[in-house]
Image 1 (spheres, rainbow, N blue to C red):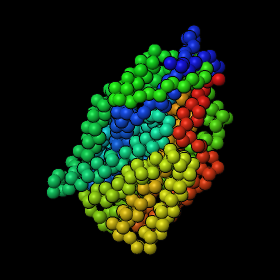
Image 2: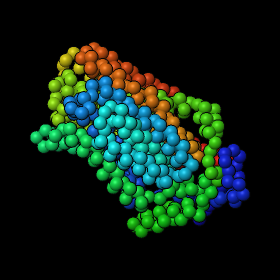
Image 3: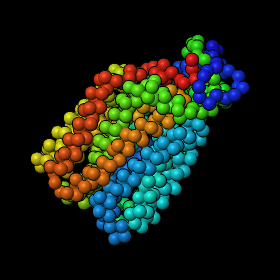
Image 4: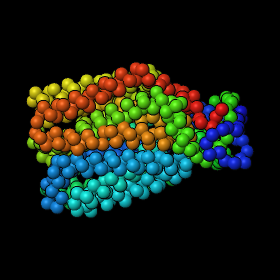
Length: 489
């Protein structure tokens, strides 16, 4: 085995007195053929996005039931406020748990963030007024936001470079499996012939907790990131994990390519000071920082504005009964799932920059066209849904690409926190959009709703233009080549 020497460095919180580490872990992970281990990573980590899709869709699907509830009696703006509370919680959770993920490791945070989610989503079912409902939604979002940092950094560090783009997009796109599941459940749980809707929406939130219990079991079989372990002074544990993965792959009949020699010098560190994080973001990678912020903010406003108010659009403008909203979410979810699955491989073959420009531009143009058709009253509930499905076929891939870009564009030692920062800033900028769109819909004016559509569309097109100038060509490259680790010199 040809080792990758990791020796002394400057900066960071180095582990005093620790011997220099020699390892070839980055290359050994990238040379692995696709195997059942990688499918385990996809399933066990991708379920988090399913949970987010479940939560967001339930929140949208039960909007009518919350407004008709004899206990809650929410207005459209109340529903928008609670949804914004969920997003604010996601921002807070992403930042706090992202900071811990880079210090404590990827795997440990899986259990903590999932525990927060389980308790909060179950607690939502017992809400009795707007403050209690909004608080539970805030804590639910905190758990999901914390998951984003841990799972996206783990995906980046465990998946081979040649498949990283498609895998990341496909996992992020699994959000919509959760959306489809929630929409199907809402059809049953909000049907007054089956169950009292006042109890139905409460039972809907218990579904997420049940899925969360399954995740706890699946994640027992996932290892800690060997890259993270080696850079944090635990080379023996990292070596055991990488050997176990290689043995599993070979047991499936795969032959591993010889390890190529490579040189890098690293000294393990326990943590990375915040001063070094901000220096890296704003001095070393200012263009990438600006670029990731634009991508995240554009897709966050675009998605939150449309999806969180999806049910209210159907009920207020097309007189769709709240119990039937789930039928209209299913085709919308299908478009969102198919986008990353069918377009994802082009992000690895054709490249990040051209595909991000394409998906962001088409998303903006299609939303603007849908807005004008809506304003002219050319659409029915069915055709409105089909227009949204076509728009979000591209928007889903675009949004997933934003997470992919933030995850692979910065060094290993701060990857989880970088993901959290850009997710938080983007989401924070888009957090008010459900509330704003709720007010636009509540006004009953198609002209005002059109203005909201056009604003969201313009943000996507601006992001495409920024990609032309600042896009990062990270396709098929090792993470260490895309962004040199801070401890290397």
